[in-house]
Image (tube, helix red, strand yellow):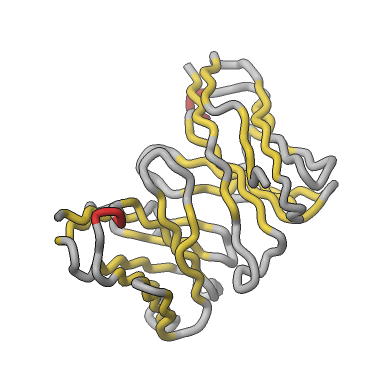
Length: 115
Length: 107
């Protein structure tokens, strides 16, 4: 199993550009999550999904969109990039939401810089 | 007040000592917590999960939860230089993370 994969690893965007961060998992997990981590800070939840076709906002959803057309993929879309979106983005997945029986597995992250 | 709060550190301890990492939370509705370890430039990895008052031990790690006082702690016994990392506390119910405490274990 590859686990949780993210592409690209690094990206530089100009203000106003758009892009999609890709996330895929091959563990047949139902739950998927997108977090951002600013330098020296903890993770903040952007969006999450409890299954194909179902998504919901997290703590900091503004400026982002997601979709979940398949169990495996959970792309994150930035429509109009702003310098405030410079961050490291982590995707994670888990089989269910009960942490006593399962855990979140994190991808390696995408480092995004908006200039 | 932040919902989940940690001292950013760094916390420096000598090899072999006990490292004590603390986390406080403001929402009494938070019932359970994760502790993650994150090496510089890497993704977080789960160390412990705790949902009951009291202690939970796993190898060299002990998590403690006190719901009355609203704090969670992580003790690392026999600290090793390889434990040097940032430790993140997170509310499981709300998926809210603290900013993390940087631990440095020196030989």
